[in-house]
Image (cartoon, rainbow, N blue to C red; front, side, top):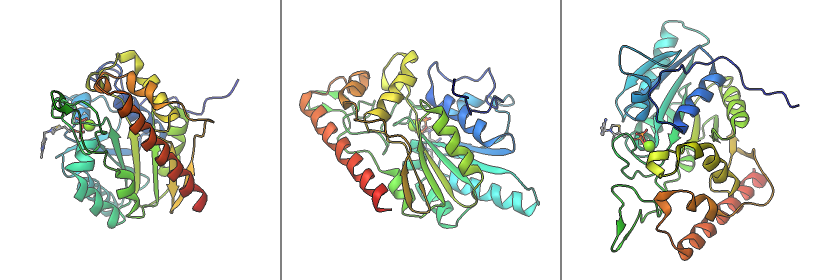
Length: 296
Ligand SMILES: Cc1ncc(C[n+]2csc(CCOP(=O)(O)OP(=O)(O)O)c2C)c(N)n1
Ligand SMILES: [Mg+2]
């Protein structure tokens, strides 16, 4: 039998207030298994501030700082500067922010942190909308998805615009390391986190994070939906180290995107032509990624 490589210690404790099936909770659990106890995490306004607190309690077994939604990049820059000034060694500084707080509201602070070569890890958990305030669309919401601000009805068919390519924006800053991870593939997730932990400089994670109430699927399906997203090529697992791309999961032929879409209520209004269009986009992006891997 294969030996599991995931560390046993739990730094996300019981008693947190995540919804059943919350993939962002699973993502934090895996992130801290990879980083270990000498981690300081900065969390902006998002579901995760609610999951961890209310003050003065905490479900996290590491030091945690709550920061305004737009300033995670600035916050982790300050934490790193403070740790260095105080001579605190061997500590990992982590920003753990939602897609709204990263792709939209906190984008300039993230850009600044990357450009200054801040020695810290920024992780964006992507549940593809502003979930904590009631499922409003973000720049990371995919085309066609229902949200409360991209309704479905007469003349309205969910979000009209494509998803913002946050990895491309981050990679334009030439970080030391950037990777996509998905809690449905925990071994791949923790291996990448352990690798990033041992590097120095700006590092970034794009975390796939299904949200049962926001995406409208049963809460026992989160892991399965995550698997489908990667196995159909919609959320490929890869890492980019000093500009070199490496796809970390190639499971043979890609599964059809249709199964992933039909499993979620937020896409239930899409017709065959919509599904075909999304399939063509996913196939095209997958080919582009394969090309990038072979060219670099
Ligand atoms: C400047 C500012 N604008 C809006 C808010 C309200 N707000 C709090 S949490 C949140 C949702 C954040 O969405 P995301 O970053 O995707 O995290 P999620 O809630 O999905 O976990 C918003 C809009 C805020 N706190 N500060
Ligand atoms: Mg979100």
